Length: 436
Image (cartoon, rainbow, N blue to C red):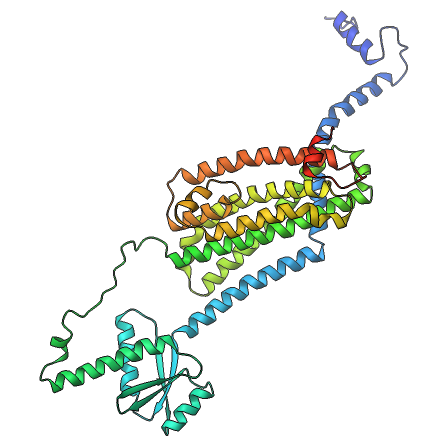
């Protein structure tokens, strides 16, 4: 039978001696358990530090979603997007509808001929006649705004009446109908027919790149990307900078700094703010997509889907960088009154990115699609236009991530060094010169 002994190896004795305070330490009850608890606490401390930024991020999100200004700005932007879609639907439904006043039975033939010409040209135009008893009644209907235009026969032919301006659609198709009717009458008088008279006068529409996205869709998507990026950056930046300077002014940050590292505080704020900004953007793009589907523009939605996905990726990178810069701008301020002056350079940069992003075209747009921040707008626009090779979006994103890393490191240094300085407002250069 094997006998179990309580003999200890020299290594075991050394470990126990270290845990109890040394080889000659008294073997008091519970001393070994206390040492183990202390060791466990030391092991848990790095894990707690790593989780600190998650706590800050969760707090940032919880505070923001209860903030009235954040909620109002989100609702207002959604209303603007839905309103723009509704306006587009209304304009589309009325753009091709024209009501023309004419003396009874005189304009019917011309109106039908105008619509036929528009159909031949693949134009969605609907022209209706409002019959009036006399020429004076036609003029009165035009002056009152009851109709879009008036049509009267004159000794020289026909006259198209407008009140304060010309209706270009009515002028185009009714004018073409008048010319066609006159040519037919003249051809009959000359002893010929319209076929012989109009031989070779047909104009056909041919698209050289029918599979590419129309320029109007690309332009609309570019404005949409630029507007939302600018709006989100400004609202996020001012709110974040104000939050940081308020904590600094009220000395709350000194209490927080005694519990967690300033780097963890910054990371938590950036993650929380960026997460909320992304959630906002997903809601905005979903509203726009629903609007396109509701208006029957599913083809347009399919054309912009790829660019929209890339925009969200670039948006996260750009907003995270700007959030870090705005956080640094808040850290160098000492009072809320300083926020305007410390954030002005960043706001100016965002405005330049917005204006340049929505206006450039051609080679300049291609170059700027590889420049950080401007690529947030220009690269998705190029993707929608089908103007990129397969590797260009990935290469542009890598450049943006590399630049983002450098900007975040510099902003983090400014934030960490300026946050505890409460004596005076600093500049970015002065904050970089401070020591930790």
